[in-house]
Image 1: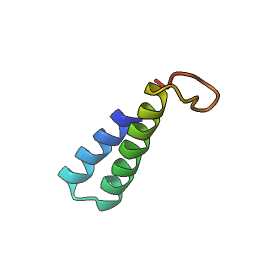
Image 2: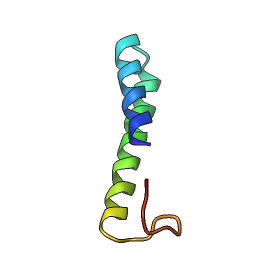
Image 3: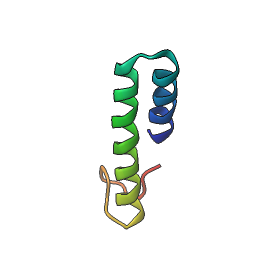
Amino acid sequence: MILIGVVLLVIGFVTGISILWTIGLILAVIGVVLWILGAVGHAVGGRRHYW
């Protein structure tokens, strides 16, 4: 999810399409939050690890 968010950020920035930039930012933030929750041991979606 983080990778998709970063790719959308780059595409949105290069092409000037602001909706892609916004969606990419949201996906990257959600991915980082889920990654941190999984890293500290909280179950995310019923799983101990989030990849």
